[in-house]
Image (cartoon, rainbow, N blue to C red; front, side, top):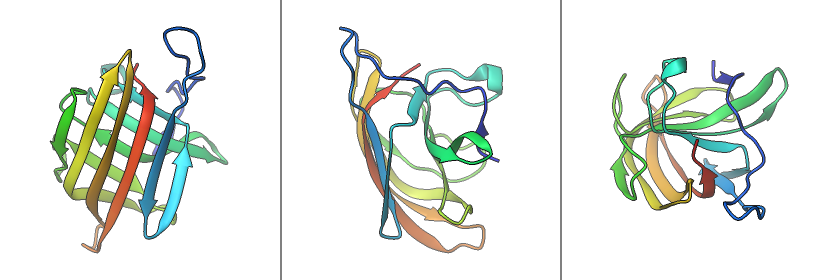
Length: 148
């Protein structure tokens, strides 16, 4: 479903060769998760995925990387992006909860606060819904996410 077999999540290095501290944290239903398995992709046409995609995931048996949070944006420019619902929507959010259910963003925002030297930082707060229409809040922030 959200397995990533060909994506590159690698050691983060800054332009000057020093280690670059990155993290991606999200909170859903009062449970906080933090990962360093996060990457933003400018283009992924080779996988038929939209450009300007952000992925954050975790290690899980049977997966190379299990994607938990995915944003498909219109750009990586600094600014505020309104989360939209619907198939093919721009600024779309997809989230896999702790039980393995896929939820879709139905409103909220993602803010890119910095985009420098191929690293993104920002935060988000969005309402997510299940297939049956139950809603909940997903919030989080990311720092020094590598852009590929």
